[in-house]
Length: 255
Image (cartoon, rainbow, N blue to C red; front, side, top):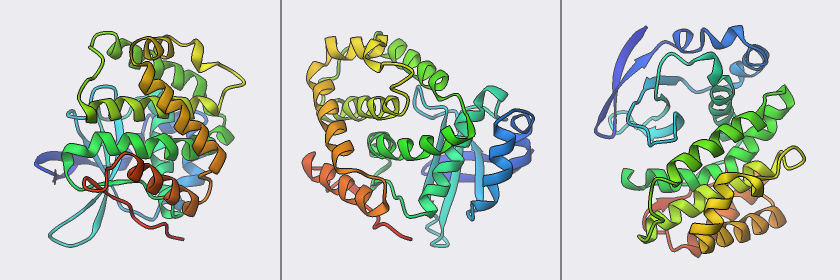
């Protein structure tokens, strides 16, 4: 099972064999077809790790990190629980597809300091998740079910906390809201996000953040982000708009 250990920042993480992580998923459909078709397209050596310190509401995350000893970029797949459960098939497929779109030149916003990982991951995910999930739809993954579970979890967390007042936390709320709006746009013909409990909570408790997220979603859909170059220019615009130049870096698109 365990094949080694790595340091992620200051956190030690156990590394597991991929076969152990995905064993139960390979007995589910459509993950079995997805994995057979797509796994070979991933060139990176994936480090499958157990990371119980992931933020609340985030059970899976793929991360690219520089190994300062070798200079190589490590591809780290972080799971709150291992091995993956059959019910996690859509999320594991999602994270694997992130690696494919990265290879194809679609780059997210990097963080200079790990304190800003959650903020910048939320910004990156708002658009990269749409590119990823549009591909999963072709395999008939049930994204509506996954999104509803995500929205329910977000509402459960939100109603137990006070609306944020600190600027970076407000921005994190806004980027997470933007991500919800962008994702639900993929399945708008099946469910209206504005009818969800989390949407109503956001509009009532942080209306200015919700309105700003809506404005950015309209801008993104108008200008597009379907090519690596367009995605780069969208991130560049948002980094400048929110004055984040000092806390992040933006890798150029590659082909």
